[in-house]
Length: 205
Image 1 (cartoon, rainbow, N blue to C red):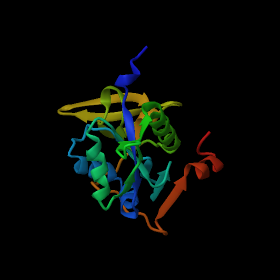
Image 2: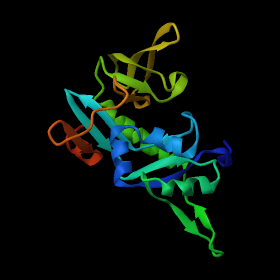
Image 3: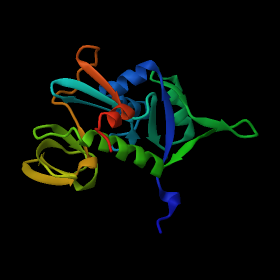
Image 4: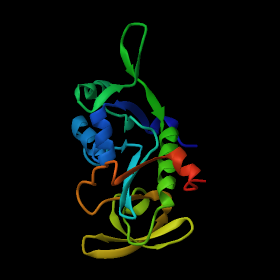
């Protein structure tokens, strides 16, 4: 049995309106890492996904207004996020002596949300879509979907001078954009879909 003391736990962050906008744009994770002074490998989970389907921008919100950051830094580092215009508050509690203590979530809770979000997008995968692989041996590599199976996707990826086809579970594939910043949502061109709405439309089982 794995030692649960070594398992990642997560701090819960409530976002401001500006933070929510960054989440919709797909840039919040990098902004939070910059505020924490950590590199791109530091785990951050933003339960939003934005992608293009049929010429329209679709945004899926699993939990609106929140993001999750792995623990492991000093607690003061997390509380300093509240000085940022992106963060409304960091969840915490007070001990009897008045000391503020970071409230954390177990890794299983965040992984369940991550899988649910990935599965909600999996139904919209199509050949030719630009995607990022989020787990396994090809983690963080971007590529193009070249074939689809019932539960997996074949993604053509390039690493240095090599090109390979990676066959990965659909829940390890997320949409990306051909440009650095995704298009902003607006009422005419954008479509914001909650998970409940996707279930009603049959996009989620």
